[in-house]
Image (cartoon, rainbow, N blue to C red; front, top):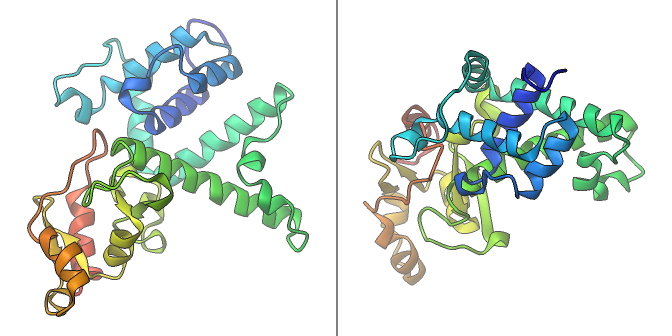
Length: 259
């Protein structure tokens, strides 16, 4: 490993972190940037600069008039394309690289810290714990990527209480392995709106406007009139990055929504 040439492993970790941080937090003083830079043998300034290089490849950033930093390399573009082709595989690879580096530096397992409650359950074997722990960490990646893109506010109601926010899948987790960690397959919703979306009572059209099912519209209930009917035709608050993929929205309307 040299100080001048970034390896694919380092770039996978950098992209993984890029997805989970708001654009405004890509600076050398960020604690997560400081921690990761120490693990990969880079300075916080160098890692922050690399994250801004990655931002220059992000259409969601460049289309808003922000440019990040130029000088993104061909390898940067290659890693960007690999992640977008298979979020599941690349996120898992990044997790393994990250864990190996923590072990090498004599640090405790981060997934174990995140999932320490699971580790206390005696009925799980070591292998089962590892599988469940990795799944928990992958889900944490998806949640952070989605919620930070929406500035931790429900895109329908504007609710900002973290305990009531869900990183909701547009295409269900079980239906598309390659895209279950793709942040463009996610919406930041309150627990109520997540449940309604998951059950097919609400959906979105290609203009990102809320559609209500006939079953919901026809319910003569004050709660529905107060909290759901005003949403009909309302455009959601779009995220800073990872705008919902219209292909996923169409799949939701055709496969989940109770039209």
